[in-house]
Length: 185
Image 1 (tube, rainbow, N blue to C red):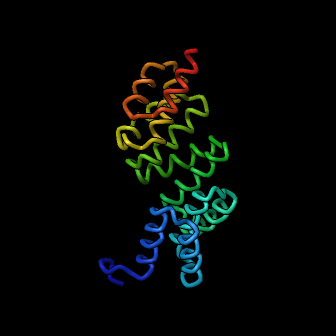
Image 2 (image 1 turned 45 degrees about the vertical axis):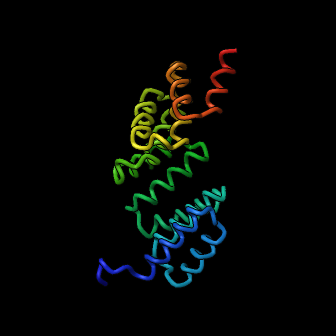
Image 3 (image 1 turned 135 degrees about the horizontal axis):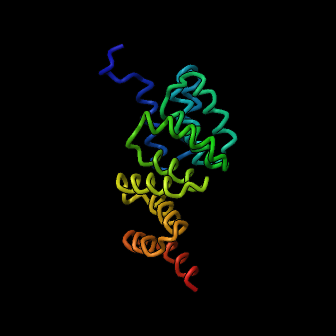
């Protein structure tokens, strides 16, 4: 197959991504499941399905599917990220750090991976290391409110409340400002 000519599977994956971008997760899931009936051994469809299950907050299904994807293609950076995300979401931060470190090596400037890795370090009590990663994620994606939130909370945990306040103000993060005000009272 000519790599410059998109395959039908590439079109299906693009369609799934578009549906996810429009928050149409049920339709994206149906499209992915339908694609699996034809492309049973393509890890990318399983990764898409795991991502959909994460958005739907079904971590059990996401974990089941990502295990299969990783068995098909253990070197996938996306698969490593999704597996690490699930570990962090379940509170298994040691495992999350190990897996997200692999994903970060494969995608070194992915703000989402760096944010999750940084937050996992913060949750393990390695606040300075986590802050360093969260600052890097913020530099890569300064409008990502998840990064703003995690960085702000980590700053507060480190005692840098004024820096957290400025970060939240600069980004219009009223929830974070409310948390700081509650701490001040």
